[in-house]
Image 1 (cartoon, protein in one colour):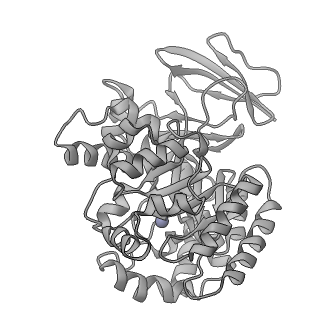
Image 2: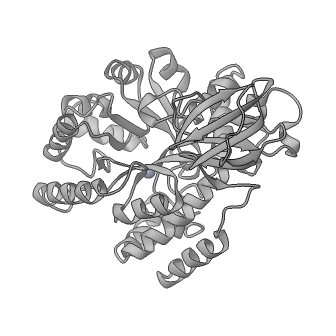
Length: 413
Ligand SMILES: [Zn+2]
């Protein structure tokens, strides 16, 4: 299986790109197709690296548009938790298939997922052809350490049976839902087996105050004491991190994934302190969070919100440059997230943008992508050399939407 894309626009010149065995084997102005290649004539369309959604709960597409104007606790207690208690594997599969289709359409080719029935999400990821790091949410607030440990082992074993598109991960839900003992164990397991860890951290000010009251230290220091702050760790949200925590996170090499849309929708009252995080040297990524609290999985929409929120919070339009914001959305500012550079030897994951996008015709491309574009500018999405979308059409999308809707209705959503 080989693919050749000709006459794509990259940095002001027209280039070709050839892919074999899932990787880019040649990229440049002189690249030509070989006999037997699947061919795409890009006709001057922009070639760009794909986006990485650093934090989501894919199957929560089923919860989209349900209880979206409620405060956090009633939303969780009335709309989310009672339904989640009834979810079966097919529900999660159908919700995750819809999420994958939306992400392919919007140019996201890799996501970081934390959700129930993780093997159903993994199946959806393989069937859709994109990449994901997947972890079962680990809680022991209402259970035991043994249950959490056994559940973690079960889901890791199930996830290990999937192919290279799926990366097994550990996903302790948060410091207020997982005990100290379990967090310490998760840190040890992560180190022993080189497993990435994703955890919600410092999403609300209350979480910080509770942590100070209970443990006498702020959340990042608490995680570090338990051995959970490392270059394998992704901290989702990080809204209330202070300068000392940012310095510690940078020193340990952990990644913070900011989720501006979900933070604003749930009105957490703050903005991830990106200028301070950058000054400290923190690795940063961008996520949508689940469609239950966003409700979109269009990472380009969140990219605009991210840049605007940073400028607005700083009272300074120079607080972040478009090129930096774009790099963050592609995962290029946090190696753990799994960015795919456009170069020979890398995974053949890339996007072609629509040539007729009115938003992209004038001005600097990075600036247009951050401030003017939405996911609708993506024409072609390629993962591992497979064309998952061409001409803005994801094959089978109508059926994927209908099956997810049927599942949501069955659940009373
Ligand atoms: Zn989340």
